[in-house]
Image (cartoon, rainbow, N blue to C red):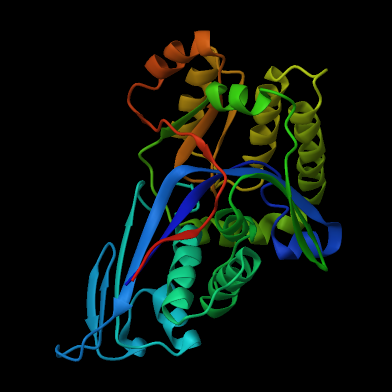
Amino acid sequence: MVISQTPMRMSFFGGGTDFPEFFREHSGAVISTTFDKYCHVNVREMPDLFEYKTYLSYAKIEKVCSADEIQHPAIRNAMKWLGLEKICLNYDADVPAKTGLGTSSAFSVGMLNAFYTMMGEEKTKRQLADGAIYLERTLCNEDGGIQDQIASAFGGFNRIDFTEEGYTVTPVDFCDGRKEQLEENLMLFFTGLSRYSFQVQKTTKKMLPHNTVRLLKMLKMVDEAEDILTNPQRNLNDFGYLLNETWLEKREISSEISTDYIDVAYKKAIEAGALGGKLLGAGGGGCLLFYAEKDKQEYVRKALSDMHEFPFRFENEGTKIICKY
């Protein structure tokens, strides 16, 4: 039996520039972090005692005799790609799917980590990220960027740069105490609205050619955000104001990114004292992230009392195997 643990991610700046259709021509970059909400994938070989060969437990339960019969596209394609059969797989997570926290990519990374470990193969974090990108974008033919798979595999608070040649992952070099202060000033709320990110990403992909100037502006914000985090002469509150700027740009990329409900909630939080924020993930639902100083957080909390707040802490390890026997 093998159990993998893989963190969720939150992306602050540069979202959209991680689409290959964009960064192959213009380059791209994001600043993101993983945090202490995880998905766990438990896999083992299926005994030859049942009328089915593969047992899967996620939001559904599947009992099948062939990988071709599997309904879950990522599991089906991963097992066929790796030549696996007779598998028992159980999946659970600390947060629901379709919340904008990169759950699907965390699952893909964690599943591959567990599968390879069960097969006796040790893969690097880069190999796991690359494998998850190939699984989701090529084998499953889902539209979207590639930052989520990289973030969940590597873990930590990073700047990820994308070019036609590939990507680089660079940990953000915080000045003393700034990382802890940032963590204290961030608030995460679930809107209650769920959506499949690849459906929103399909529309976003179509709109990329019409938003080149906007995306280039958002790309410059990555440099600005990194300077705020690493330069002791900068005021950390500028990070909050910059979040507001990137959200105002992002929501204009596609009409599917925001909703009236999200816009009203965002306005309430700003009026309550948040300096800025953004919707995490592709859009249309999921989680709202806000930057608010400690003395304003209770006001923000009351303004968004109809939403569930997720307390969290940053994490640095990325995907890992927590059980193997």
